[in-house]
Image 1: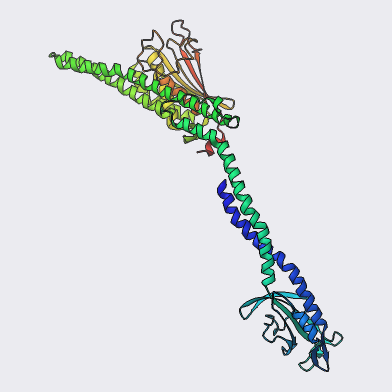
Image 2: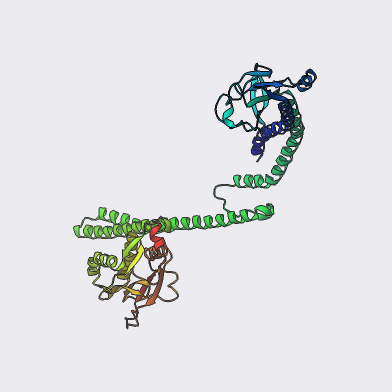
Length: 473
């Protein structure tokens, strides 16, 4: 804030100088105008000869000045010298045919004589206003040029006095203003400096809220917003720490199994036992691979905000049909009937095809794992008014209402479940659904009539495509 004040000071001085010169010119220009007007009244034309009726005393009065040198000059229309100082410069358009300055009014211009700047007042006078315009001739000139000039010493003195009267107080007042501003800024910003030092002194893992009681009221909203951000950041870091700890814990089981089976295979001599150990090793490897893939999928989903997704118009029915076809072989291996149902019309939503395929794959995988052999899994796409519905239903054991709010948590497993899994699939589903603005609901399968296997129905409700969602990509 102090720097702009220091920059404005020279500008203020320059403006003051220009204004002072303008003010100083006005009274002296007025006096110069009076002189040239009085001199013009003394010019006469008799029998084609221009003369001035100017006694010596009047000449002395005309040139009287204690500071400046005063000059005057009278020329006829042909530029011949009539009276006064011969060396006084003529107007620039004196020899031209233009009448811009030859209107009888007093005009001013700046010039120089012997290197000294001059202020000149001049006018053209018509000596015989009744004569016709075409009667002018060198022998009978009708116009004469009258000029009075003076040097600029008085003007410079007055301008300097004005500048001194304005600038000198500034030299006294401005440092006082700067000191007061600096003091006010230092006092006002000192709490921010203290807050800065307190934040800088914190360790990298200290995300505790800042005590708002020790800051001025003016920056309390800033501290409040900063505390909210620190709280969100702390929650995010805690979630990441828990995620890493849970992931490490989950990885222990398949890795320990792989190590145990490999060591057992090394000790076995019977080929059949070695083969069984290798089969178990392959299963553990498959489980570890699936866990790693799901961890990567969840990380991609969580670290890909809605604004970063490339959304486009997607035929949800066509996408679901392709994903179901990819899982047909897996359903055969589980001896489960995997079906697909859709309406004849296209069901178009705005979304990211890669992420939606990941979402549906996790729902189908979850259904196949929990549905007993001989059961069925059905993927259904339909439209309900303006919204699109994606449903995956199975004939498995179902999910109790008390568990439905928890199954979307990472690494959550329903107690008593014998199905293998990492507990990440539904967490991935929730994350991707949230990025697409979709709601996920869990119901019992309305088509199941078994008390032991009531089945589950996962329903995703997608909002209608909005142009803004597509334009954002």
